[in-house]
Image 1 (cartoon, rainbow, N blue to C red):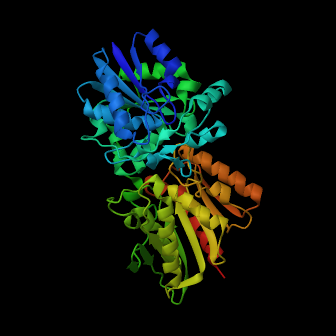
Image 2 (cartoon, rainbow, N blue to C red; image 1 turned 90 degrees about the vertical axis):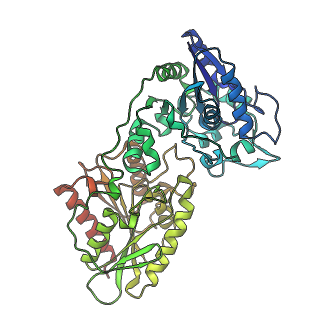
Image 3 (cartoon, rainbow, N blue to C red; image 1 turned 90 degrees about the horizontal axis):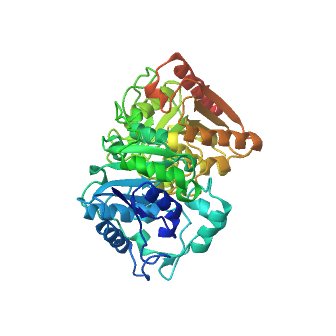
Length: 490
């Protein structure tokens, strides 16, 4: 027999698992919905209640199980105490299930995954949302009106220290069997995981481990309310070690390995701080294109983005055509780092414009991948010297699961008729969750009357410059570059 220890997300309690628990018990499982201290069905708690308190709650639930095999399920915030308990009872917890949850490690606080502006602490507690405000914590897709009303009625303030105290682990959570149950209407899915493993920071490579599996649910962030039967089935499959295994990539990151699709000669390069300038042969101040990489990129990644084949290739290509090709290493190391990366970008722009080899009145910014979110500031309030914004296979609105991204970074909401001309390169084989944001941006740009030049590459993938060396992709890069440089003329 299997025991399921169910750990709920913020502001809720064991009650939220009611229908799921019934179905699991009907299948012969032992089920323990945990009542966390300070929550509606847990022991009373005050401002002193912290994450360690909730870890102790889950440890007691694990210790009380009669079954030989214990599966701990953590939803949203609940993954933090779930992992803490599994770390303290390695011999009892056979598997951890991440239910539409983040990937915290040792030293991470839950607050890092909380949506910007969603937390207002008062007297040591964080007030729960209500009604449509729940959307800031995840998609409400499929949640019946009655269930949402019950969520409102039973939600209670969360002790703030449960969100701010760092999680403490003595080993990697992925040393034990692990299952991710992904809610696709919330922007999570197996395709997203595969993309992160293939192109994201090295930390995501653990998701390709042999003991890690994934299951999908076609619903929003609250499957215990929107699809309890399907969720119960997924948990039973997880306990049986079913689920999709993600293959390890042949290379760590296409953007940081391989070769650029065009054969371009090296140009003289000047390095100042985080910025490199690749210089053309032409004399006198020249227009410049500053390339902005995506991410998040781990601080220890080598080569750094500006030394990657993609950015080197673009910068040298632009320089061969008579403009200064500038590249930047910004500090987008985590989804919460967009404000810091924006500061780095603003500083890089000032440095580039001030260089005597650059015509500071003729600048273009070229954003790639998730760096596209950084374009929002420049689209919303463009300075007169910004002649064009280029976007290649960009992310133009945070997917629902990217809750840590500051709400300021939403290009699809920032674009207007006053925005500079936009050159947008769309990869036909783009990840669906990213392609959706691009289509929303195109619709918003067209409705606003923004100047938009679309470069479509039907058979290209995300980061195609080092993945797809074809006549089609080469032509697309050449066309996009000519369009950008055309806006810099005169």
